[in-house]
Image (cartoon, rainbow, N blue to C red):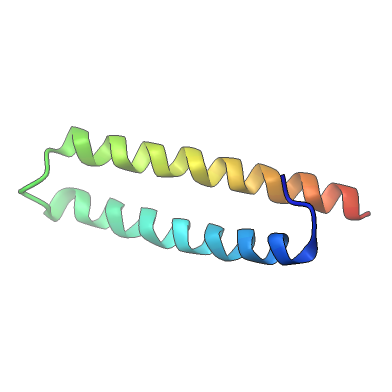
Length: 66
């Protein structure tokens, strides 16, 4: 749970980084021959789940700010 502006700022930065990594993983999904596509997709799914959690925390914090 985000409790202050510092945590809010840090979480927003994490969201940007997660989104960038997910985009890169999606681009590599077709190009990568050394990692099985199902394993790569599981990695993407896990990161998307974490991203969704962070976005939910941001929404909840923004709702309490007014």
